[in-house]
Image (cartoon, rainbow, N blue to C red; front, top):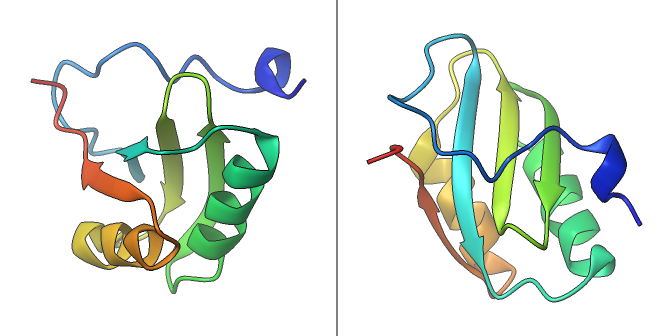
Length: 89
């Protein structure tokens, strides 16, 4: 299982991070294969340096420069999952 190696993505952020990370809420993932598909897709987007996806919590933590939240959400939705930028509210 990948879970022990991923950061704790289930804790909500107090506010959107400004440290080059963006957290997405992804609904519909049921397994590690789903999470891998989402992570691979996110890593292909310009500006993304890395992505950790946890199918259990339903969150993806994306790292990079000048991340485009709407583009990340659209890429995940194109895979058939519901996605939104998590604002921590």
